Length: 145
Image 1: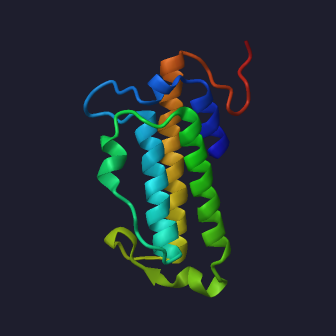
Image 2: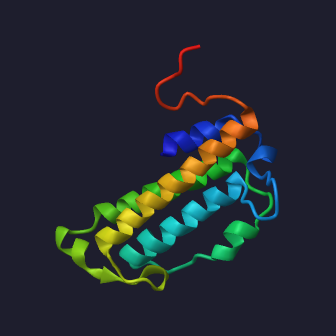
């Protein structure tokens, strides 16, 4: 998923990353901030026990700011920290009950939640990128031309 996100951001300008097509829509930049916030809250805080520093409303309220390169860096750093946190989890802890975002899930359930959440929003980023660039992104098997 990280390579898909990087490929999408690489095809857009910094302005396109923060483009919204209506007040009800999120920009790609918002989705990246949201993915990082969610990963931090569920994995680093929920699983790893680190302080919950997430300010969810800011993820969606931001209208411009970070460049594509900065967003890629933030996502890469967040994924690396999440992987470190998960790697430190013992097999016994996978069934431990935790309460990220006020929900009751096992550690393994929290990991699955984040994986599904990343897939969902990266799919949205792919679609938005295709619409903005009016092109096939060739992310999997290239289409015959």
